[in-house]
Image (cartoon, rainbow, N blue to C red; front, side, top):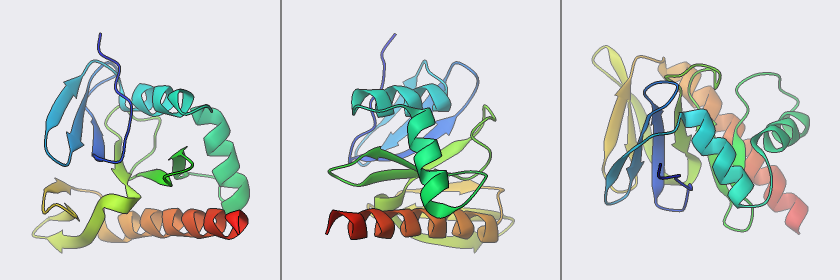
Length: 147
């Protein structure tokens, strides 16, 4: 089984089941035999922490209870946010730094990345924007702590 580590080219992790995900990168796409949660957890561990620790840290810094953004890698500020509950097998994780635009498109929400690639979801624009704002706030808090 190929384990996937999130990196700067990772745009999104799309959970397909409890044992498979689709990973979108800037120039390619993978089918990975890991759940979205497993990819997030193994990536956090690869970079020296744990998903649980990162989640609790974000919740404490932001004063939130649900759907915390995750700082996957510190030095490059790689932050991902879930657009639905991370406990659900179909959770989609989005890279904060790679988002260009989020907009309503017909009966769905379109997330466009910096490279022009897009994904569509039925999660509301307001909900995704809320997650985006939590992630930006986390990034700003972390940048402020570095100074």
